Amino acid sequence: MARACSTCYGNKMVNGPAGTQVCPMCDGTGEQYDPGRYFTYELGPIVLNGQQTLTAQSVQVLNRSFRWMMATAVFTFPFAAQISDSRDQRPFSNQPVHSANLWGDAKNPMPLLTPFVFNKQANILATVTDLGGGFGTATVTNASTDVVFASGTAFPTGNSWVGQTILLNGVAYSIAAVPGNGHLTLAVAYAAANATVPYNVQNTVRLGFIGVELTDGQS
Image (cartoon, rainbow, N blue to C red; front, side, top):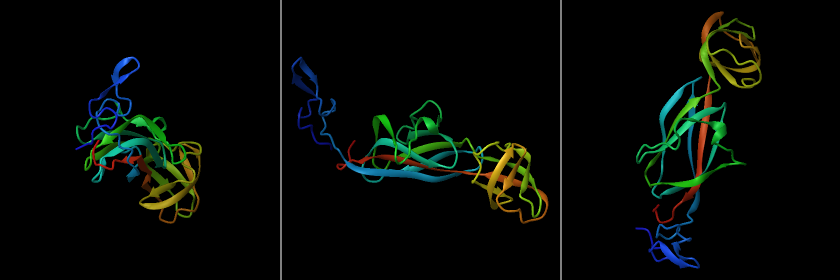
């Protein structure tokens, strides 16, 4: 059971210059504010095949309630995510949110306007969709670095795939250039028989939930 606020003694209201007002120390909860201990939950790695959506990705809160205060992410390509609390399955957004609109990084974490408390042993749930990878089939030639698009997600012209890994028939190769959406260039030559093979450019996502673990296990 949470301790009573030391300012309002659990009454939720205090006397102020303008009369009775909501207790500024506990924001009207009547409970003692718990600053907690810095804590991070990481969800991942979540490996998404090109354009894939994975539901019910989860991380369980331990034996202390957790106040989520900031959001960070590390990812190969942009993604969209919808977060919810396992208590009531209610999401924090009306639809999956683009990674640029919610997730910061370690140097610049995205603060939540209203911190949220996940109960101890609850699950933080995520539905995550890749927005930058691709999959399909491509034509490859033995001893050549040229890969020709055949079907599926067209190769994105430019630098977004440069330096990333493409799986060709399950074998990993590094992408050196994508001069057009009909073909790309490998960093090293393809080392198997001429064929049209499945290709996949995956997106690996790690979500960081930064906040405080509440010392009394209460919300």
